[in-house]
Image (cartoon, rainbow, N blue to C red; front, side, top):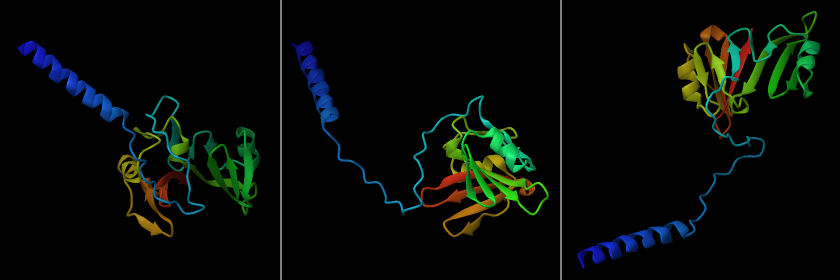
Length: 178
């Protein structure tokens, strides 16, 4: 008899749990994002062997400071003019010094979220969903954070790496510059 009571209690608990799982939950509200600030949602991924390599003061992934506009175009599958001084290519923004004889790359920037395999900076490997604070802690040493209109920036490793946080979504970008 006692075993039968325990069985009934166990079945009742199981049925109650099953009913709670089947009950639809109201959707959670998503905060509004201003036009132009929308960033694609980040699918968190752990860093992998194909992480982009960022070399402070030198380059990111296949793009290096000092490259010509034609060399950057040759490496990218999808190159487009962002402005007379900027070229967007495969998730990177490359800025050029048009005053230099060959119009060489002086700055290269990418969104951390676009680096599916993460980004390697020295011995630190950053997952693509790392927060601004996590990136600063891993990349250091860094200067004080500078608040900008719509975000903030921090210069690290003697200016060889810049970490930017943009908009209300907190999108993190990494940049190298001369």
